[in-house]
Length: 164
Image (tube, rainbow, N blue to C red; front, side, top):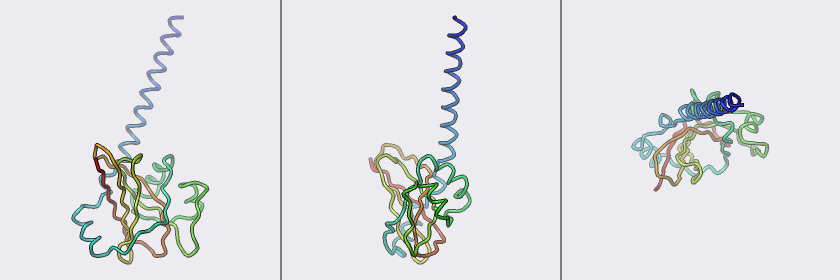
C-alpha cells in the first residue's frame, strides 16, 4: 500500500515537472524582443508614411500561435496565405472580403489580457502592427495576425506599449 502511494506521488511530481518544462520552452520560443522595431526608426517612419488604420484583421488563436510562428513567421515577417490556412489559424468564422488578400503577419504583445492590436498602413507597401495594454512588467511575446489588404505589403513594423 505504501509503495503505491509513493509511486503516485512520484508520478504526480514528474507530470508537474514536465508541464513546467513545456511552459518554459514555449515561453522562450515566443519571446518577442527581436521582432520589435526601434522607437527612433518607428517614429521617423510613422511621421513620414502613415496613411491610415487597417480595420480588417483577425488575431491568430492562442492554440495556433506556436505553429504560425514556427511554420511561417520565423524567417519572414509577412506571408500570403490561403483561405483554408487562415481558417485553421483564426477559426471557422473567418471570411476574406472580395478584392483583398489574406496575409499572416508578425505581431508582438505585452499583456494580452488587457490590450488590443492596432494595424496601420505605412506608405505604399508597409504596415505597422501595434499592441497597447496595461501591465506592470515590460515583457514582449510573439503572436500573429491575419490581415486583409488590397495591396502587397513588403515590410511589417512591430511595436508594443504597456501602460502601468
